[in-house]
Structures are given as structure tokens and as C-alpha cells.
Image (cartoon, rainbow, N blue to C red; front, side):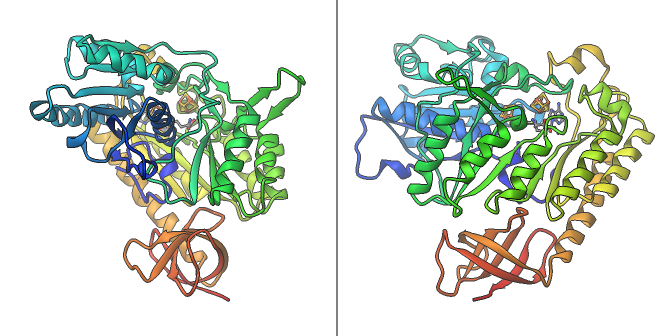
Length: 471
Ligand code: SAM
Ligand code: SF4
Ligand code: F3S
């Protein structure tokens, strides 16, 4: 159950999306792969790295599974439901083996890392299993799989960042792009499987990040989202000069590429976001005033058990600081209901925190125990499912009121909007987003995708602002 998906960056339950071969035009390949991606933006960005690795081997992308020699599923393990969905999808995809016995089916990403050889041996669902740090070995693994061997590489790395690989943009609107700036996570939140599926945190070279963002700008892209599980702990040391680049400095370097390039980032851990980051956001108009600041719970007792390393009060002071430095900043969050031992009082603390923060956007989930995590080893998953779901529903209902209020507050205001494409409902209208990440639809006039326009809002729905361009 999720609310108002305005921003795909944080939506871990994104359905599998098949990618279009936009880069294939005019080229012929001796084989084709079909890829579906699930999970967070980092997985989607990884699929673009994978496409680049395969294209170098003369394997082009197709968006028709029935025409593929190789079907790849880039997977997510964050909640049990995410894995169930992928298992179901793999069973469906196996039908293509009947018409194409040589077809190779591979599982990539977090579920591949978590379940390793089980998927090959016990469940016999796939021919190829490749973890997030092993994509460079895909070509040789594919060769192995083609000879009928079960091919697997789930080694995690301490230094792989795929820095030198230029991702092939898939399903792109040519305006917005994700740029991975780091991999892994060192935080060990007790509920979370990511440190196990993605390994230790490491930062990608700032030089390669800037080069990728410059290339994107020169190709016509107008917005980059810098991605990491915990972007504020970005820390890269140039071995040649000994200079260290922090996240605030990296963001500044990207912002300086051009005032026409918008910069967004995700995700910020409340414990790591610094005043430096906030002041850098204030200094540059093209760094968007929007922070995804997941809190997870409003109860300090829960936060301690979750190993989030901050209290309710500390988080509130961080939100206050953001509002002090960036009064117009949009703030969103992630919330979990029904974590181990959560009482009705704890739940009410989450509700009252939401009441205090009045988030513009919230991604809410009920707790799903993940094998091997600290919580699974230490605590009992003792809140009945019906209660987890009831609390989630209450939270979703409360957030709906807040997000609608936040939309209504914008009626009458004028925003700078980057045009991202046609509105889904009306081809005479464009859609774009304002600085605070809210979606706005408006009549096209004579503008085009990639232009910046000033839009005055005259109405809203709970998820969208509606306006007109002011010339
Ligand atoms: N790194 C980010 C952070 O620190 O918030 C996001 C991590 S995770 C990919 C996205 C969200 O999934 C988390 O913020 C959390 O709310 C949710 N999540 C993670 N593990 C979960 C679990 N076991 N059950 C339910 N939700 C979970
Ligand atoms: Fe998971 Fe916590 Fe790392 Fe986010 S910061 S990925 S929730 S361990
Ligand atoms: Fe899922 Fe892995 Fe992302 S578990 S949320 S795809 S890091």
C-alpha cells in the first residue's frame, strides 16, 4: 500500500518495467536481451550499466521478451512481497523456453545476492544468477550458461562503482537521468536487507560523476538525480591530489555545470545531512529544494530498536533546521508500521510526528521481516498482520490529508517548471515538476520538452497541481 507516487526515485515497489531499445536504432546485434527492473532507482540505474556492458558484447536490447535470446530480471528484496512478485514473474517468463529452448533466463540484483545458488539449484527458476557488484562478469557468465552450465557470481566488492561505464539510457524521456554516486550501505538499520544485498558503502569518483553529468547535459538532459542509499555520507578522495570531495562539494560541482541543469538527490539519512548541504542547496537555484528524509517511526523506542541512531526530538530539530535554512523546501519521508513490539502508543507517536512534519510526500509500508537482518535475529515479529495493516491505513489516510493540504497551499502561486513530457491524460498538455518535486500539468502553448517555464497554479488534485504558463 503506497501513497501518491509522484516521484519514482523512492518507489521500491515499482512494477517490473521492460526497457525500450532507444539506443539500438540503426545498429544490428547478433543477439538480444530483454530486461525488466524492479525496486529502487539504484536498480534502474544499474540496468543502464548492464545494457552498456552487454551492448559492448554485441548484445542489443529488445522490449519484446518473445524475441530475446536472454531475459534478465533485475530484482528487489526489500520486502517479502517484492520477492513474491518476482518469483511469479519468473514462472511466467519460463513459458518462453517452450518456443525458444536456447533461451537464457537470468536473475540480477538484490534477490540474486540474497538467495544466491538457491535460485539455480533448489528452485530451478533461472540459468544465471548475478549479484549487484558482478555485472562486469555478465558476458563470460552468459557464455557459461549457453553451454548448459549453471552460471553464478554473487561476490560483493569493496571498490566496484562501475565508474568508467557510460550507462545506456533506457526508457528515457531525454530530460531526467539517474546518476549513481555511490553503492552499498554501512548503516545497518535493523529491519533492512540492503547492507546484505549491496555490501559495504563506497563512493564513486567525483571526476567520473561530473563527466557523466556534463555528457548528459550536452545530450540535452536537464535534470540529474544523484543516487545513493545515504548520499550525505558521500566521501571521495582523489588519490593523485589527496583532495577529498564531500557530498556538498560534489553537488556544487554538478550544479556548476550549467544553471540549466537541475540537480536532485536521494536518499538522505537524517543523521548525516549537514548544514553544508543545506547551505549549498540555498546557494544554487538549480539545486532543487526537496529532501527525502526518511524517519521510519515517530517513537524514540522504535527508532532505537531500528538502529536509526537518532531520536524523535533529534529528527524534529533536523526538520526545523531545514525549514530555517530553506523555508520553501519540500520534505518527504518513509514510514514503517508494525515494527517488532510496536505498541499503540508508539504508533500514535508516528502519527503525531507526521502531524508535526506535514510531509509533502510519504512512502509508507508495514514491516516485513527479512531473513538475516539484525531485527530478524534479535526481535520477534510480534505485531499481527491485521494490526500492521490497520496502522498503515490510518497513516495513509492522515498523509492524504496533509499532502492535499500541501497541494492546496500552492494554488495561486507561480513556479518555475521543467517540462518533462506530455501529460498522461491530455496530449494538449505538458507535465513537469517544480523545485519542490510536485507534478504540474498545463497547456502546451509553443513550448517544448526540456524548456523551463513559469506556471501559475489555479487548481489541484491530491497528487497534481494544475496551472497555466505565464509568458
Ligand atoms: N536508504 C534509505 C533510508 O535510509 O531510508 C532507503 C532504504 S530502503 C531502499 C527504502 C525504504 O524501504 C526504507 O526507508 C524503509 O521505509 C522501507 N523498508 C526497508 N526495509 C523494510 C522492511 N523490512 N519492511 C518494510 N519496509 C522496509
Ligand atoms: Fe537500509 Fe538503513 Fe541503509 Fe537505508 S540507511 S539502505 S534503511 S540500512
Ligand atoms: Fe530493493 Fe535492492 Fe533497492 S533491495 S530497494 S533494489 S537496493
